[in-house]
Length: 310
View (cartoon, one colour):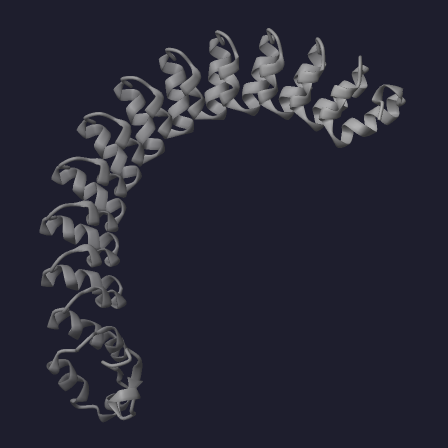
């Protein structure tokens, strides 16, 4: 098909379906050019000397179209980076305004900026904390801005200060995983933000254990041989957490059974004194008690039979 023999309206219909079809048209009119780049921004590569209106339409559709524009003006540059920040890589010596617009759209765009100033660095990490990995020797202010946006960015900070460590775990307690030998203060802040972050703390002290289970009773699953005090704090928060404790102490068992007799289903091998407690003084409890079959793992009512235990 010879696109050049088509009427303008027919050409418009063709490029409105596939913008790159403009490559088959010699000297397309402005209207055809605009429809083409609005459908497919990168089709500007097939247009000789596109005017400002076409350039803007192209980069607003696809920021990467700027790579096919020779010496784009500041207006086009801004439109392009506001659409796709990383296209700043195709702009030679971008001004501060363009740099800021770029990193505000996508913090990672700072990777393509040579020697970014403090203002640009801060804008980048505030948009996306992990942009700090592309900043050489970031100052304290930038480090803090990064970890406040995403606590886990501390993994890209060499020898973070106590202030940075605290800001990191305040944002995300699990970020303590990336901190070597965290002090007690950092440990406490981490587990207070997320009790389960105790899984990343080696040999946590009693104070940290208690703070963790008070924040999230489920954290007891990550504590090896928790003491009586820690077990009780966990089950007081949520009785079902006793199932996360290997060999729960008698006091913890008694606490949840007194709270609700049916919680016995969460105790593997309940203590004999618990069974005595259940049976004493109230015969009805004997038949409401749920037990767990040691063979199939299913719960069943006392007095009934279950699978191989028949």
